[in-house]
Image (cartoon, rainbow, N blue to C red; front, side, top):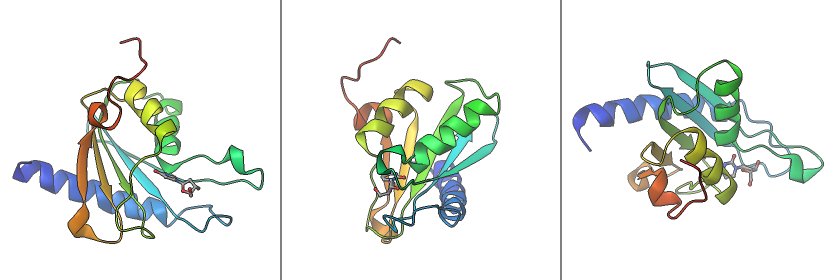
Length: 137
Ligand code: THU
C-alpha cells in the first residue's frame, strides 16, 4: 500500500468511526460503521440498523451503499469502503454484504477493515473476500 492510499484509508476509517457512533443496535449492542468513498471523492456513511424482528437488520456496509445509490450515485462508481467495529479486534464483512458489495462496487474495489486493535487493520479487495462470486459482470 502506498503512502497516499494509507492517508486515504485513515480518513475513511475516521468517517467509519463517526458512523459507528450513529448505530441503532440495541439487540446485539455491536456497533458498526461504514464509509464509502466515491470516484469523485465524496464520502457516504452507513451504520447498522437493527429491528426487534431480527432478520430485518441492515448491516453498516449495506446501509452506506443503499444510501449512496438512493442519493443518485451510480453503481460501480465507488473506490473503497471502510468498516469499523469497536467490539472485536478486527471486523470482516458478512457473506450477504460481500455479495452486495461486489455487485454495487466492483471486484477490484477495496475494503478497509478495522476493529479495536488498529495493528490488525486489513485491506482486502472484494474479489479476495468473495472469490468465484455469482455475478453478471
Ligand atoms: N454487522 C454489520 O453491520 N456489519 C458487519 O460486517 C457484521 C455485522 C452488524 C449486524 C448486527 O447489527 C450486528 O453487527 C451484530 O451482528
